[in-house]
Each structure stands twice: as C-alpha cells, then as structure tokens.
Length: 393
Ligand code: PLP
Image (cartoon, helix red, strand yellow):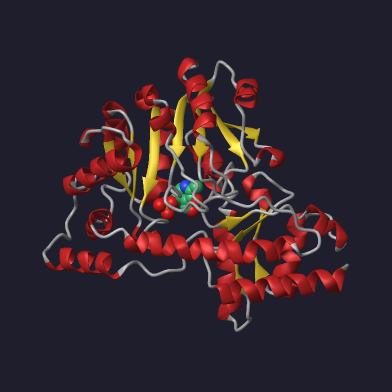
C-alpha cells in the first residue's frame, strides 16, 4: 500500500526505538542495562491507583466530555494558581491523552501549511515530527553547549521570518535538564509578545528540579503572554503515571475549543478512570512527588561525578528532569568510532548498556542517559562504560 507523503516525512521516535531494543535483548536473556527510558521507574503512588479502582467500581467507565471531567479541570485551576500564580478558568483547559497529545492537538489547531515553528535544540524528539504532521516547518535554533544548551533572544531573532508562528520552550528540558532563569524567560517572552509569536511552553518536568532550582512558567514571568501561549503539562513524570496517559493544555478558551474539536474526532476523550486517578494525584498528598524528586536528586549527585571522571565524557550538571546529556564526541573519537551514534550502538552490543544517541535530539555529539533507574543499575552501567573505554583506548 502506498503511504502518504505526510507519514513518509516523519521519523519514528528514537527514544522509544532504543527502549524497545533494550527490552528485546533483555527478553532474550541478555543482561542489558537500560538507561534509555523517559519515564520514572517508580510505581504510581498507591492512593492514585485506589482512586482509579474506586472510580471504575462506581461506574465511571463511560465516555467523558472530550475536554475532560470538570472535577479535574477544577483541580488544575487550583494547581495553576498555587504553582504558577495564574488565574485561569475551566474553559481554558483541555485534558488530553498524555502531554504528547496536548502538543499534537496544539499544532493541529495552530498551524497552516508552511508556518514555521522555532524549536531550540537539543529538543525532545517529537516536537519536529508533530510540527511536520501539522504541515508546519520546524526551524531549529541551536542552544549552544557553552550556554548550557539554552537559546538566546538574539538567536531566536535571527531565525524569525514573516512565517514564524510559534516557539517551543521546554524547561526543565528533555534531554539536557537545563532550566531557563526568570530573566531569560522575560527576555524571550517579551520578544515573542512583540513579534506575535505564540509560545508553546512544555512544563512536563516542572516538579523535577534539583539543588534548590525553580522552574518558572514563561507565562507567570510575562503574564501578557496568557492569550498568546499554550502551556503543556501532565501527570506522567511528576506522579510516575506515564502509562495512564493524562496530560493537559492551558490556552485561551477559543483555542481550547479548536483543540477539543480535533480531539473529538480523534480520541473522543482521555480514559475516564485515568482522569479520576489524575484528580487524586492533584488533590492528594504531594509527599510522593517530593520523595521521588529526592530519589532522582540523590541519583544525579551520585552518578554525575562518576560519569565525568570517565575519559572522553564532558557533561554540564543538569538542574532538572532525569537525564544526563554528556558530550561524547571525544569518547567516540578516542575509541575509534566515526560518530557518537556508532559509539552508542557498540555500547549496546558490547558493553550491554542502552543509551540514546543525541542525533535524534538534534545534538549528534551528545548522548542521553536516563537516571530513572536504580542506583545499583546506574553504578553497574558506569562501571561497564569505564571498562569499555579502558579496553578501547
Ligand atoms: N514533553 C516532553 C519534553 C517529554 O519528555 C515527554 C515524555 O517523554 C512528553 C512531553 C510527553 O509526556 P506524556 O507521557 O504525558 O505524553
């Protein structure tokens, strides 16, 4: 069957592909340590599971409103006031099938063919492909490693054309773990405001911040952006709920209506019981979030020094999310590989460690290691990496 041009233009998710490869090797009895996962290794906190069970027992098993149940929207209204000091109404929220679908709906509702979307690199793998699926054009602006992988207004300015429709910001970032400061957000936000550029602010790692760092929403810093932005968030990362598939978007009511229209013809509604689970996540004790955050911080602190002491690896210490994104160009060169991608492939085959090459994130000299796994696994993986380097230098 002949495939559509649209589908031919997109690449599969490299992070999901490497995770699948690691799982496959594991299933065939090979002891591979997976550092590729983009999800917390913790189970969903018990009270959240109980809430979903109760909802199912009580008959919350039917279609819901496309944009989500009103109780969950009310909880998000409160959360936005508490965490971001933003006053929003329920009409400005759509609950979606994960943050990924909130982004998908955003681009479907926002872009006309040829509209350009500025995407700072390194970027999360799905941004470029989702923009292309909406007939938009991704315009990559490099966030330089010496500037903590962050883009400046000057670079955004250089990339702006008459067709620029939106800018995607992801802070804390996947894959770099970097966080934009309030001053940086102010400068970028004011530029976007003046130049009619919609800011799509992906705040999914908001709660996973370390060493006293704070991730602010660009809309809190530049409140006038409220009607010129789409905030993306969800429960996947903060509450260890990746499989439940609940995310949300906050934008002006007419835009949310357009997103809802698209969702009504694609998913109908996010899973009913998962919405009740997310409700329990927001309204229940936030202690599990802090417990998991502390565990991530502990792992980061324990692995960072070990990683940078391995020959050939240079890494800026991340401030958030759960990834390390070292530059491995020298490591690859020292061991005779022509690219970091080839080096990473050899690491899976020989050292039995699965990491994600930076190529898919628009940063081919880097590699992403997820520390969403036990300290035991992390220590073992770094030992294997060290041994691999010693054997090949
Ligand atoms: N945005 C970023 C930056 C992510 O890393 C991810 C998940 O990996 C998502 C969005 C999607 O989250 P969800 O699982 O809620 O769809």
